[in-house]
Length: 293
Image 1 (spheres, rainbow, N blue to C red):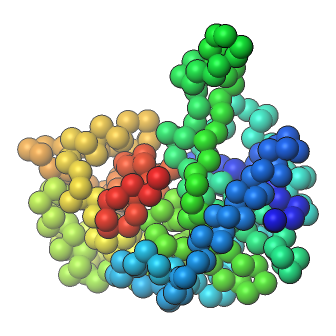
Image 2 (cartoon, rainbow, N blue to C red):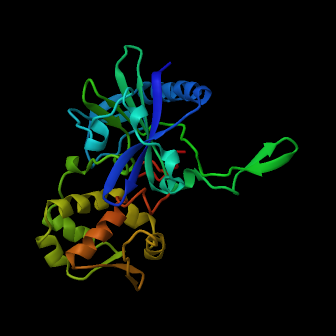
């Protein structure tokens, strides 16, 4: 069983990301250590590691590999020994709506540090009054928000080897910054994206010509995501509510602004880089759109 097992929440509040400890009763902590060890074993069972390629859709048995991966600052300094010193998510019920992922830190069979990740969406928050629990002969509900954990891992980081393994770039990028590993779109490729039937660009020529590295990477991500093929303009506009972004629609198309500040926000939203994947709300496998459960 994983030793010194602890859980933390990856909390995103606008431009700030931080880890907050999830305090656990001892019995639950022991049970989760076994559950996550089983998930870790399934994650590696019969897999083939392949170098990350943004244009490739991995098979079920394949895991993308990022060697020499350096975790972001909010994660790099933490391990199974330090995680107990973090502030706890229990200090503020409102923080549960900003959880982007769940991370477990523990020691493996060789006493090596292991870092395991699960995706987390707003639908996994248990709201008071919406969950009925049998209490004696009557049903009751929780008094404070609760969390529902997944049954599969989204990513595994091995600190000793500085190696990150994952299956879906789109999923993991919601809680770990991976965009630096994405190849930039060319000027013509940006124009191709802006010519998508769901988009109406104000000035596609200028947008493509003036795009810096940040924009080129995001256009490449949007091209590969499939979001524009899976959702209507009205559906995407509806999901923009509460995410500090203006998505304007005309004649069934999303108006892509020429203004860089506005277009940056739209690209962040379409790539689900604002909070926890605001379009889908549910975790899907890359390109297949099959629920990953």
